[in-house]
Image (cartoon, rainbow, N blue to C red; front, top):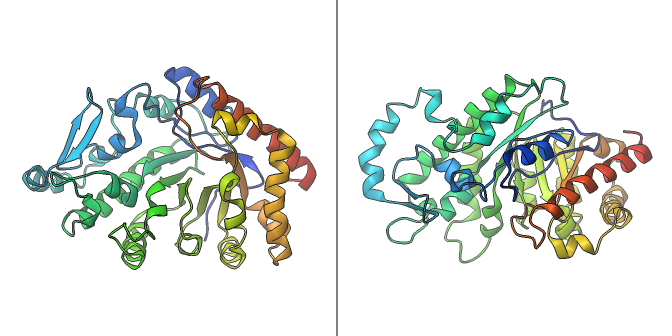
Length: 342
């Protein structure tokens, strides 16, 4: 891989935040080394990650008042030709101000001096799993809709990345894919072999740097062997499992992949049980296992970033715990950079 994503224990975070104050959310995003534009579904349903990905997608039925997002095959058929005629128009694939006031505020900032900046879009697997048609069936299972969806989402990612690179040469994208953890369930109805082929096709169309963020527990061999530049995960929850995949992690790092270690919980109860030192120890325990299995320490530190473990929209103290988690990530980063000389 040849990418410009920084490592060296710099900080970033997931985009979905509980805030209803756009200024405050942006302030928090900008407090990290690698800022991003926040997604604020509590501020507006248009700011929901699935809704944002669905803008201009043919067949979509959006009800903002009822906060529902559905799909109609008849509507898809009616709208498909007109959509295809606009495929060379970048505005078809960008996020409008209606669908994200926050995104457009972010685009107005001067971010050239940051080591990198980041954008994100809901990935095709998760989008296809969560959007149901008129028969309550995920559109991912439809052999007509799915190829179009892969192409459409790839174009959306590329347009956003192009806009972000105008602000910072080292911009990169997260493809948010929480649905990947369900691929290997017998209930999924969509095989991992089919998913691998579809994701290979998808990422072949997505410009670099690009990667995946998810909070769940997928098949890590599957994920680490995709053609990605960055992988962001919840290592706070999945530490023991992830550390058992040393061979695939080593290959990923050897391709200059960057791992974003989500180590700070954002849920109120879990966060209250932890201190800075306990979270550092939890992370270093994983690292020490990987180092003992032959992964080079300096290489891994150089290709690592730090973040909160997950998004969290509901806490008894609203956004306060999430903001404390952001602060904790910065403290952990500073201590580990001092220790490992990054």
